[in-house]
Length: 86
Image (tube, rainbow, N blue to C red; front, side, top):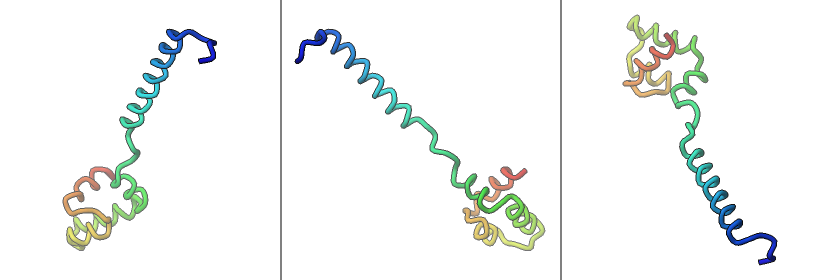
C-alpha cells in the first residue's frame, strides 16, 4: 500500500511466513508431552516404597488389590512397575 516493496516480494515473504508458522504448529503437536503417569507416580512414591510393596506382594503378605491401591495403579499394571524398578 505504501509502495515500499513490490507485490512479488510481499507474496514471497508472506508464503515463507505462513510455511514457517505451519511448520511450528506441526512441531508443537508432534512433541511428546513429558513423562507418563506411571513414571511420574513412581517418582512421587519413591523406588524404595514401591520395592517394599512389591516384595511384600511376592511374599504373599499383600494381595494384588492392595498393591494396586498402595501404588495408585490398576492391577494389570503391577508387572510394568516391576519392570521399571528392576
